[in-house]
Image (cartoon, rainbow, N blue to C red; front, side):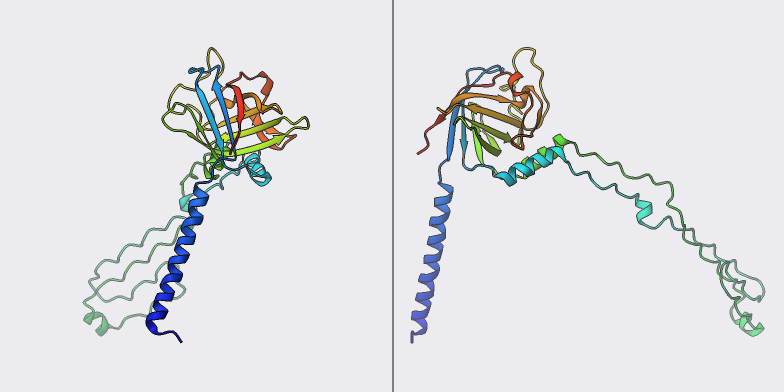
Length: 281
């Protein structure tokens, strides 16, 4: 049998060992490098020729794909709130008035709506009471909803629904440029092609160039107002290609891959040129 002191030492060693194991595991997870890295150069924007680096730490799976697509195609509308007066069961009726002080003893009148009249008061009882008059009846509760109007409801649009879904999603990567801060990637879906090429669809929870004109489409190109950005990279089997962004075009759900994507990809201007898949060690 171990002594009390020996048991304390043994327990302390076990606790320290457990803490050390957890620390090592946490460090290993946080220091894990990216699983994919891409470089590119900006084009057809206000700051062309800028270096861009995309790093991915995880791929979105089919469940993530379906949730993001559903947020766009089937936004959940809020329930119409009832008016405050209706929730309270209608307006309350007013209180009845108090009876005046009587000069002589008289039986109190029955309140309106009562089922039986009050019993008469004797002369001696009336004199002792000082001739006070009876209290008036209480007013009844209102039965209607009053004039209160229903509270306004802001409808959920596909854009606001998708923006909310992206904000709630975990970060799976980053986009780095010469800007002060990077952009968190909340969706990264890879679509391999039969010829060995691949399409990569990315989504950020904030619009590229949200606080500056770095990503503003060049020339007279129309500008979309999405609060997020969808990026689509198309690479050859050698890992070379181009990228386009929702900054200057609409988005949709591609029925073939069931993922959010750029609508009319071929008609959009190239925003990321000389895209290259880098070797990840």
